[in-house]
Amino acid sequence: MRWKPLFAVLLGLLMVGVTAGSASAGLSNFPSWKVGPVALNGVYDPTPKNGSNVTYEASGKLEFDLNNHRLYGWISYDGRRVPVSWRYTVIKSMDFDGYAMFPASSRSRGLDVLESVVYANGTVWLFARDSNGGLVALKGISRELVNALNRVQVPTSSVSDKEWLWMIFTPHVEKREIPVPLISLHPDRVRTMSAPETSTSQKTFEYTYTVGWWIFKSTLYIDVALELHGPTILEDNGMYGFDIMILDEGEISNGQKHSKSTPLFVGDDGTSLTSPVEVGIVVPHSSSLSLEIPKVFFDYIGTTTPSLDKIGLGWDILTVPFDGSGINPINAVSLFTSTEPKVLYDKFPPAHPPNVLHASYENIRISSKSQWMGGNVYVQRAKGSGWGAIKIYFKAPVYYRISVTQSGGFKQVGLLQDSVSLSVFNP
Image 1 (tube, one colour):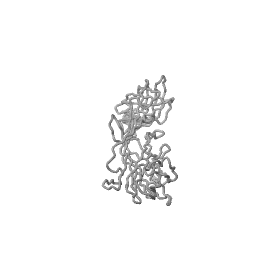
Image 2 (image 1 turned 45 degrees about the vertical axis):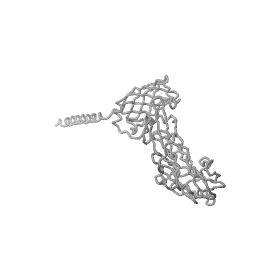
Image 3 (image 1 turned 90 degrees about the vertical axis):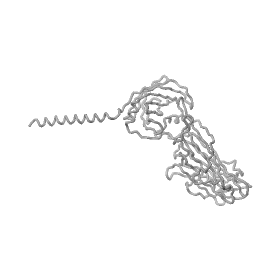
Image 4 (image 1 turned 180 degrees about the horizontal axis):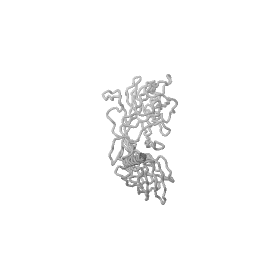
């Protein structure tokens, strides 16, 4: 029976061969983990500026290691040939048809990648910056890279193919007035035009932010409204609602507006890199007419980290003429206490309520259509009669949110500053 052990060995070898063949066939269904080298050609600008197009030739060859999330090879520009090696994070974009790659680390000699974009048609762009601030833009073609990315698990997010522009350039900002809506912007305030004792003061603006270089350009817009609403006849006391609201946001391309979610947001994200929206509230205090603020209520519909949202608050009694001019509490009054939003604040000195307030919406931001910050201010007459103005100042920083994979995270692109006022008769 000596043939039985030999038969067992032969059978075992046969089974191993079959198993190995099956495994090999399975692996062939997965993409190649390395793609390239991909040849790229493009330009180098030693002193890039927003809107500039001064360029010199540049080129490179890069290999994409999908298994280890590495991008390596060489880039030639400005008479130098620089070996590069970057680790990256790849995201499938919801904003364009393709993928965006962002650096996780770099081992290159003074050349750091900003963003690499792979479009569904096989076009590959890479944007990098050298230690002197020069900008490199390279273009290549690789259908193999697109096919490989299509077959692996890649996280999906709303990310732009021009985010690199926002990383390095300060945008050109334009502001223009747009038509005022016919109804009150605030959802819980009904504007009754047939009632002469109430009125609404509104200002609506469109802010555009543009960054561009060489053949690339990105323009985002945000439409913002400021509102003050309340009685125009103040017998003894009255309540006035105020707010700053996002009406719309989006992108402008080829002269056309496209309403959509953008990386822009207004206010404080709760980090040291962002600042809160601030408001200043002023009512007259003079020998002929004095009004007081006995209580105030702050509210918002936006985004915050639960339990970290708060309202910084400061107040004073300052001489203010009947038209509310001359004093902006945001600049004139320091913050020295805080309160919670959505809670009535009435802890002012009862014998001498203030006539100017300064408030800040800390760890609160608004970033999409119909989100707002505001509140209600209660006004009472102390003495005098005649016309007087209630005035609200706004100071609102605007930020661009860089991809979460980037260090820094935010870049301030603008500052919204304006005011609204309402004339009130005190009989």
